[in-house]
Image (cartoon, rainbow, N blue to C red; front, side, top):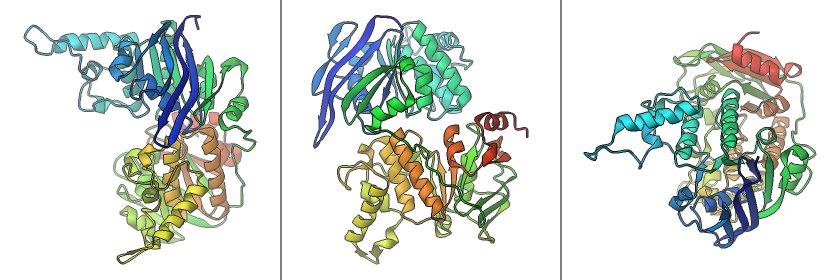
Length: 498
């Protein structure tokens, strides 16, 4: 990290109708620094970054870039000032090539005004080679892995000669191996003097990759710490305003009553010969690398995908689940991996999203019991500690963590016997994670059988009774609680040996 200040955001203020999103937030980024921005969901991180990116205009404060006061009124203004943002939801065009995405809107043209494809591909290849990324520039984006798409986003950002690069939850959808490659890329960027603003809820990552960490809470600047001189406990206390003494909450019981039995499940594609049991009051973890088949198994169980082989039994009785409605009637609920694509009605209210699977509780014929609907919403907004000004607030206006809690609350309102949670805390801050863990523990103690897929090994190890490790579409081994270590899980997930 050098001594040159690339960016200063001083005393930034932003107000929306009825909400003061940012009261007094400051951020400083040095040349060649990775500066982490940390805060709970709803703390104001996204608002601050959108002001820097030219998506929002601030209502107060100033921005100084390379020592010069700067006004950013648009995304184009941000780009001209060397600022690029890589959002959590990637925005590449899937049916276009890598080169076309990198130079979208800036394609080189020949004398006849036709796009010079050869020149564009050559320039893209040069950029790809500079990061040791073995992807042909003619490759379609849709054929790339999420990690590869993310690298294309980084290269696209740098093709604008970005000196300030914002990365929002960059590891939320990639494997540990890809995280290593990403970190290697970030270290290369540091050497060239690029300043990186890194947003993540994964504390271990921040301690590994960042130089300094700035914490904001409820729209206010709390403080900045040098990473090597602070601790996770101090940062968490700064984030939530209190000490989190019980981060993982788990009370283990004796597993006696078998609720679900899966035998030799396959879907004719990735999934093959998957067998396992699930017990009442158990949290059964599923671990493995991205693409191992964990989510695909759950889609078969919930009727979102058809299983071509195998048997399912609930309480000892054979069942043949072919659609989600049938699964729900059997007492199965599923929180999917992608809340925005697969779960939420973003243009609808918190109340609508919370009660959409519990309509029978407050609708009879043409009559709607609004008091009952509001009571259900209140119960799960309170239980999940969802931060929303009103129940009529559009879900799209909530932070990512609060959106996730709405989805979990929706399924809890159906009173499930079997609850499938696919990456339940992805994009959720530490305070909300602790709350979700406590709720999971309470549900298990009440007899709900929970299946949890997670790419965060500490979460899997600390919350599970047992863990099924998957590789190449099948379960390699079921580990008992006393066998759980990160090294053991990764060995099985990578080499699939016993």
